[in-house]
Length: 612
Image 1 (tube, rainbow, N blue to C red):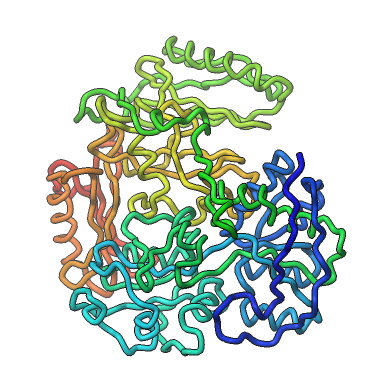
Image 2: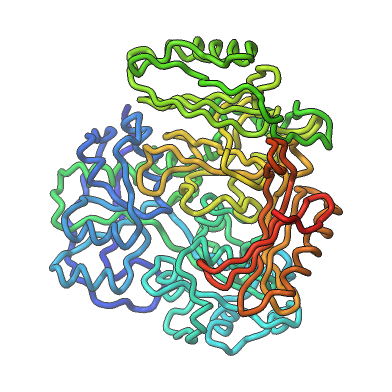
């Protein structure tokens, strides 16, 4: 398929990467060779794909390009900005897609005698963040300078409440700090802030504005694409600058104040007819620009703005089946504990020469039948696979059976009747469970188990369908059950930080008020009588009166402890006496150090301390 000819390629040599900014250090530059104008899509080999690098924020950009040009993004592996520049300068990569080079990266290029070409590919912008609870919706560019030089220190001075401004900054050499200094500060030097006000990564800065103890006072900055597509926080808003709010439209038409770009960067010595130059030329074509716009980036020209491609279609998802559902786990209030002592145990799956033959669970014919039904279903998918490991995880009234081989397979069966569990069975009747899952799973503000190592956001999360089977139990969890949700390679939402071909798992607790298997939704860090401690939040919506009793018992025990430590709380379902019948319990700890902890155990219902 032919693309529109690229009649002009804008090439910005290192040293002039941001318009309107202070004069940067002198780089090693000369006039670059021309980039060829291509009339058809470039052919990208697997070997060439391995010679592309970039920053976290450009992973979705290049994935979109590779999926169109090659039909797959297999082999793509991006590092972060600093490593990408190092790899390019060392000759290990041919082209990188990154934010502008910092002073240190320019110095490294000069020291290595390397001349760089920095070519804008899509637009972005520096944006300033405030908490939605802050009444200020916009500031002027002059006020930004006055805040970050210490001249303005109170939100009242810019139309807000009478509160001290806490202005966060990024670490030196980070991409957003480079933009902040060049675009917002220019020739003005920002004040030296306390070390606690310097945040190591972009997500950490957004977190501080979203959830800082005094978040209404916080001010920070990031880049537009990251805050809108990769690390979305419901409690954070973007401030208008000089009366213009940042948006795809105001960035595309240049009306927003702090404009920047993501760039393709090559060594000047890159041959004129190289595949790297052909790829960059395609990126600047109408087809390339519209491809990036569909991936939610802002194209260089407003005429190439198109509707973003949604994540619907993944596992058959639609706007309806990702938002509408009803649980099948019994009436509200029903709680599932462990089965009584002496309940039949089983081998689950019989293997012969590493190959499964049949399911066995003596004494429970319905369970045995369900196992064999499952094995028959996966028979075709497992043809040719000879070596399997079997893991059997009994928990509460369930058993999870995992087959690990060239592919992994899993099922969850209820031991009382052989029923094969589906996602809806983990939620009470009437609970819109898929709305809960999709609303909270990747929301770092509410899902405390969503950690940064659980993959990088690569696109808006439209959600799993209500009938998804991409989940499993966390059998080790003491705090009621939790579920792991699996994002397969190539999904449009989440990618492994180091290898996009790896599966990503994200864990989610089941709240007390939504699930017969749930006990705790969150653990909150609190200060009680001058001591750090923790409190239980068991319900997702509304307040569980039992929380106040549990937390009061925990506070009373912590108050008696000596030394400079902190209180901890854990929820568990443990065997009572010598039977296998379990009771819900909570434990309260006092930690003087990681190796010096004292714990007490309490009955969940009576909040009385147990001799356990």
